[in-house]
Length: 286
Image (cartoon, helix red, strand yellow):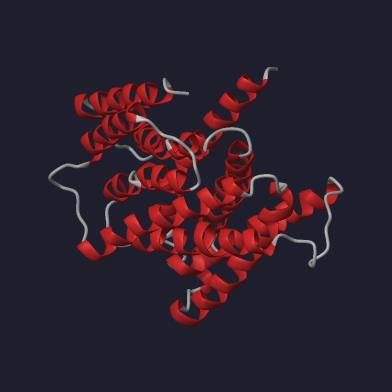
């Protein structure tokens, strides 16, 4: 298999996984409060990735870890990003949250410029068209939310973009070395905070639907998807990875149709076509 095919396949799988997590997060909030849910998700994901790294013989000492990268990933990519995302979804509709997080590529373009990555006019135009497609799908008269929680979703996009841009600058580090440490560090701190502030109900949190949802978010939505994310950052420009934030909401619509009983009409079709056209236009410059 060629390198281009591997990159394309990894990109598609990453988008497919994260396209399902919007619904999974919404479901998990029925059982576990947001902060606690984020913490447990990343503790579990970190433990699984640590076990995988050990099985593959990828061990390192604590002193040899790139703590600057581990710290940035823990704070910005897994910490602030997901606490704000989960919190936003407690008061803002998932559609509006997806639209607001769709600002992520534009933050990536900005951080990319600081890091010396070039993104020309076609990239910005394509991203704007794709963002318009996402907005067409989700911005309807019945979208609910409050400004403060909507701002939290934009803050999540900004935090995630910084984490991704920093990871791109240090992409020579093995993801199976950095991810477990960052996830465990972030997950443990957030779990303790969540237990102190939210006091989740044990019977509800340990119910079978809750466990299944958190395991899905941890193993696929965190472990597998973030490994692919860092693997891709080693091979393509950060802004290309950032464009996934415009593809993922469209996948979320399809998931909502088949798994959530939602409808898919002309507006959604038109928005999806705009996203495809915008991403295609942006990628023409590569």
